Image 1: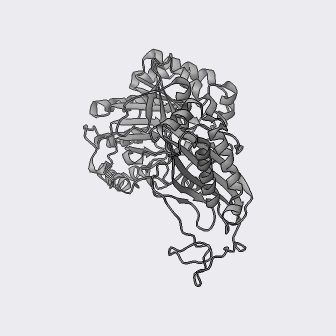
Image 2: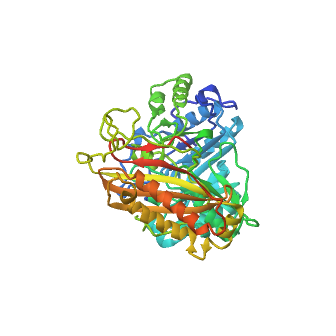
Image 3: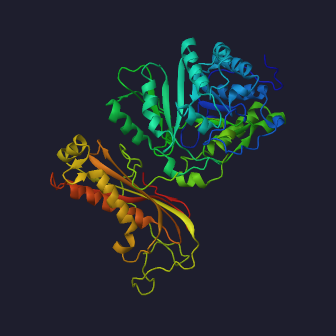
Length: 544
């Protein structure tokens, strides 16, 4: 039994109170508590290879403090608590903590969950279940032994798979597997994970790779969830869509006849900030209202200063009310200072330009043309034309001689709407025409266009491009071919025009290769989505 050094009160079930309601009307009834920063693995996306500087033991939350905070949050309407780390099972008193938290089910708590890597779980699992644990999330990014050791920098795949079987056998109501998908590493295993659900009543959740300190995040490692969905349906046929809760972070599907389900957590390409109901307590006792935010307030210090519950609630309420409507765009997140994932709690290469990827649906939802005015030769921030003399109105090439060389990235997107007959031909014949594979040829055309932008657009500077990625995919809902172009360089001027040119020419190529079927095609919504680098730094379109 836990020896509580901090008193806490019996709580009464309640709906989320004003203290847990932010200024955007979101009610927070889900609390994630990190019980340790220590971990027995070194996953590449979670912890830097050299490790992290851990908080000293006396600055971490004591077990009694964890229970006090949990009780306080449940009294305000929290119905679900998840224990995270680090790795929760490395904490010696984890079973006692779960047992005391389990007692809160008499006061309004309905779900007690844990996220774990499973390495040290086997012997503790029966006791944790008896103590009240009802949901288990196993972090497992590969079913291949060699890859497991590569990504975790440890061995133990067999132990993890065994503990999943044990969890199912002893009757834990919800068993989930979290898979962080990284292009070029484990994206080809997605179909193997789907096959795992045939005989296992688990939910496998594919998580988009997210940026945190030390994980060397790169947009080229990100696999948008709709690309995965299209790939899965290409093999298994139409998936059954399951009902999702109002604040669910996961889009759930299942293969007809399979025991388990799959899901997609699309934090990067289709965020769910508008319905977010989650708050976090770090292992050192800070409240963190957004996973990607760096604002934190210490509740530990207040408890150790003998502050009463009302004072704690006032601080919690103030933090919740400062929660933003949504997190920043992916490039902004990658540049912001934030804790490594292991210190927050929870889990979450160069790709040759000619490598082709199938995707399904729009990655960034933007239906309005957006434009950007440039001020490359003036400090004036008012809108103006580019490459135009402000006094005479004459066209001229902007001088970039005095600019600094920085890494610059731009992402552009557009679509071509197709008649039903043309779309059916592309889908039925795997995008082939008498001229060849439509999407592959269009991709090559987009790459060539990006490299030739300065020859096509008179006042664009010639640039040495270091990376070009053109993606095209069919969207059944819109009857369209969608195109997304990512271009990178290290130079003195941006690559927005290269990305936009690549998208335009790729879509024109689709038109050219399909016009024998119909000329009633419309190219639309060619726009810039994001750019990074240069004097103006990161920029993301506000049009979603």
